[in-house]
Length: 299
Image (cartoon, rainbow, N blue to C red):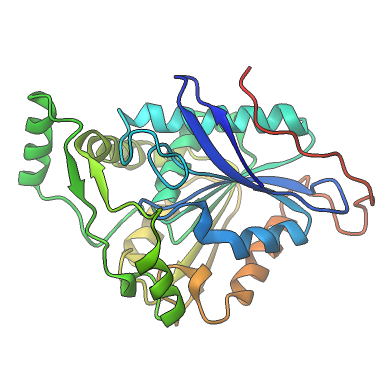
């Protein structure tokens, strides 16, 4: 199901939702996609989670996917974080405090997920980071930092810059999914200077405050990732003071685990981790009735 809600600044944001068809959700998942992707890349994993009893709300970030207003733009990091918090509060009101809320960040969305968990720790019960974009191989030089600052200073915040991820082979070895990425009209290929500045702000927050992240946390890594530095990511993840940290690696996988020839082991591991979280209802205790999921609303 595709629906929309208004963010706190009035911008309309789109999301996709999967809800179990024969029971109340065991827990609910708020999912954030990567810098180039959108919720439409993750249909299979979202459906598998719903089949296992988890409700999934996959938010298309402002300026991305189905959320088309000011494409590729975000005014600052707090704007992106507040969008996540706004959606999370709406889900909390819909499902009540007894239903665990898991924040899941995919690729670049892992960075936004951690920053959101830092800013609003009481909103989320656990954080799942799927090949998160915390430590990419391609990082800006000091000169590029300076040029970004200068562009903002002279009022060029809305100027768009190409994202250096236009080769589908970076994401997957699977031919059908490479073709899917190549033909995807909703994929994002350019972002604004303001968005890049927001990205650097998120980097700075995580670098200086990561130890404050609480709650259970999962890190899933693709062993042959050509986008993410796995060793640096593992070291960063180890700095978190979460109650329980779980790391799972798929040695032969490329970046996007969703696009592996057989993603079922990844799906099963993700579901098993969610089932292990405190407060998640067991399959056996889940009653066979369902409360319909209302759309996200602004209060």
